[in-house]
Image (cartoon, rainbow, N blue to C red; front, side, top):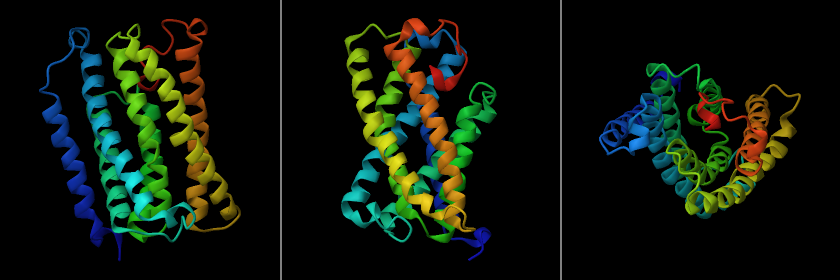
Length: 247
């Protein structure tokens, strides 16, 4: 069925509007004093609250999908479940919402890396949504949201200047473990799987190209994370102060 007539479109629209409504609702919550004093930090705080909610729901949902349909771990191209398909639609709606939020809020320059990530993620997920292939791969990719729960907590605490709290010190180690388990490991496994499509002219080759670009981004983010949390003396205090991903 042509994408313009595809039944998934209402799902994508509904998910996007759901995150937009969530953004409005969360923006009414009280702000920490340090965040409230800065309009940029205020926007980032609201944006991260939505990201945090998405990570909790999608991370747990992805784990349930793998538990309910373990074939997704090996039959990445053909394994399919309704729950997994809805999860991919749900997360695609988040990426659409977040892209629009960044652009409309005039944060594209500071957050361009997020925009690049979102465009690549949406491209990969759209191929699964509209052609019903590699849904299992989409679910495995979304295991990263388990890691994002702790990464978002870290970013929110840094925005609020709470790095001296015990919770931050505990979270930075938990975050490191989760980064390995739910970001680096699944990404390496998926890259290994999709290498079989190298040299072909298939949907798998398209997804392999996206994965390789994401691999580079993930390794760069990992190096920043290590420098910021474990080698802070090597990071100039003013470096990247306006970049969203390096908070």
